[in-house]
Image (cartoon, rainbow, N blue to C red; front, top):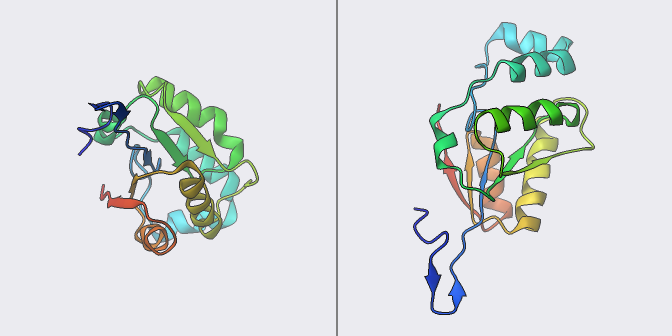
Length: 150
């Protein structure tokens, strides 16, 4: 699917802008059960940090090229943690896009943020694990989305 990424076609470069969601695509995330939902509700900042701290990379990290985008709904206070994780997993040359106005988990704000950034950056292809986000991306952008089920 990425064959044309750096291929020279005549005098013009055929370039595809690719974006990846982070949690549930490039790294593992805790599945929703009643205990996890309870902790998210009572201690959103602390629980978010703990779950992301112990995230493990997935096989999708192998699909990331230098210059690709990682657009995450993680809160802004996790930027350094997230950048270090990406660097540790060998993704030093990806562009990390995080919402600096967000200070706690908020799904609707994350969806709106992703739509805005995907439009502004001109992302052609986006890997996402959340069906609600995919539905909104299809409704509000021309970006092709790929559902990732981990």
